[in-house]
Length: 163
Image (cartoon, rainbow, N blue to C red; front, side, top):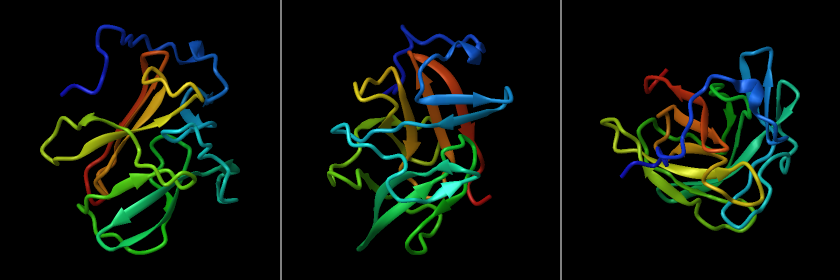
């Protein structure tokens, strides 16, 4: 299953064309998620007080085996920093959920590699559109994510597991 609406996807490289306040491009390099919403429209940014380089964290709930807690992710796309409640071994499949509603994040599709990981949606606007979302992997330590805005891929991040 292809998680991207390729018919409407445009890759232009014109990051400055992004006009919404939900994603900020700084210094022609950094893409920062400034708004994020769960599957019912609950805000996921700034709810914890945790910050990375002065930017409010994106907070998700995570279940790994019989343990669960809140994970605070850096909003800088490609920055692997996070604050987690317990150790999670790399390669562990996690259940990702909204920390406000406790609803599971919406499944977007399979990651196209050998990991078996799946992408889940963190929406960038309260309209909860698949045209504006962060696609995040459900396998711990599998650093693959995509930011789609107005059906345009504006940022992709993929790093080898374990780094």
